Length: 165
Image 1 (tube, rainbow, N blue to C red):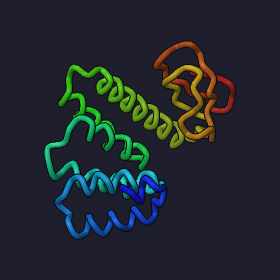
Image 2: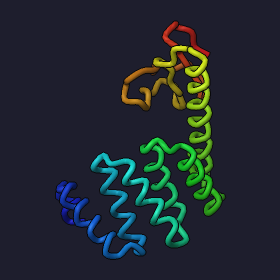
Image 3: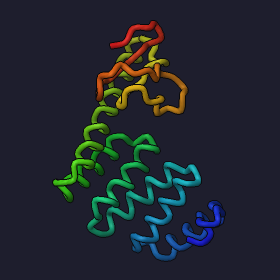
Image 4: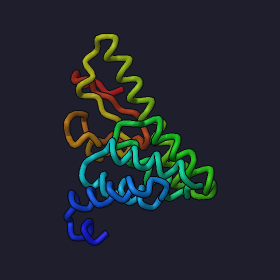
């Protein structure tokens, strides 16, 4: 924790990898490894560590939410959706879990639609999923319109032809 807090992320990552290899059944070690791996930009390693940690003990809703973020960064949208559904099951009165799960399902649907369109020969390079009107695209500005239509929660695509669906 001290190394990570001092922004010595690579050193912290090595220490946690060693700790996890010496004590592979310690969920907190794996959760810490997942957190530091994510900070180091190692999305796949973070997702893997979360998967191992969640399997070791009954996780909390907060653990599932953190794991879902790691799964999403690693491009594992289905796994992220399952983790968010589990968070909502553990805390059914927490609307944020249900909201996050709904958005994960929307991202999955939009991704699947873009894949189908791409497979059909359509140019999908400029397609974006807009979940918050006017918000910049979640892809770091590498595509999408980024403009808002005022319709909250609308799947908005722009295939480069100026037409929004």
